Length: 67
Image 1: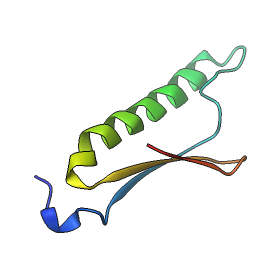
Image 2: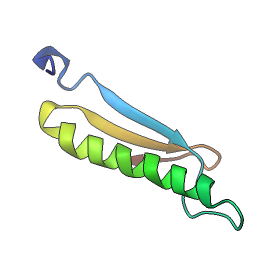
Image 3: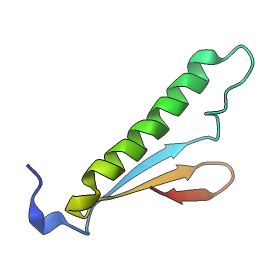
């Protein structure tokens, strides 16, 4: 149950490196990064009707994506 008083006051923030594209020899690393980013997008989409937003912060390049 999501408390309606929290609407517009809560954000999901995923912090990641830009490693989802993967690296040679690091299939598990790339797969886990991609899974976390996908989970964040799905959670943001499902929780948007409750006023909960999602942010994806790529550490290293300072890029912030609003989900």
